[in-house]
Amino acid sequence: MKPKNLALFDFDGTITTKDSLVEFIKYAIGTKKYYLGLLKLSPMLLAYSLKLIPNYKAKEQLIAYFFQGWESQKFQAIAKKYALEEIDTITRPQAIEQIRSHQEKGDKVVIVSASMECWIKAWATQYGIELIATRLEYQDNKLTGKFATKNCYGIEKVKRIKETLRIKEYQTITAYGDSSGDKEMLAFSHNSFYKPFRA
Image 1 (cartoon, rainbow, N blue to C red):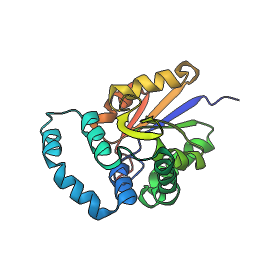
Image 2 (cartoon, rainbow, N blue to C red):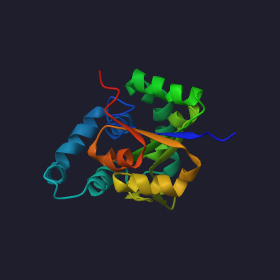
Image 3 (spheres, rainbow, N blue to C red):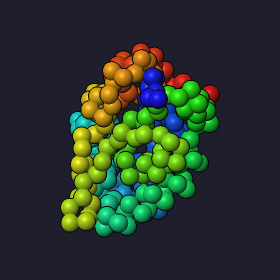
């Protein structure tokens, strides 16, 4: 029997207490190298804070700086290890409780995230959650530092949801988000909750 209801969850800030991109970089290369990198990237980060460059471009430059040229197997192994060992330490108990509540009712639960698929997927799979996220590009088994998909943010979230899921099959769509990058997904849903798991 197919689920009648769909529950869409943003990931960073909604399910988690911290930004998984930042935490993954620290995990993969070490905190010291991360902050030294931020110093070198400060002109780009300033431009982003002033809205002179878009979200996706800033994120691509950040990932390229730290990981461009990394061998794909090594990178993916670290990403999976991070997903299975670290993500549970930054999740919000109320969010996990709400996910389980939807699952117990037989609802389909999907994470829709601008973060990278590679460091969320293993965590989501073990919870029985489907994932729509940004994917990284590889060439010759190495990271290029670019995205293989559009950044799953803003209106792109709704586009990916429509491309991936058969929306007409669901009677009710409920969405949970915490930032401006979620507003289109929240507006698209029948029931929407903004920052619902903050104490």
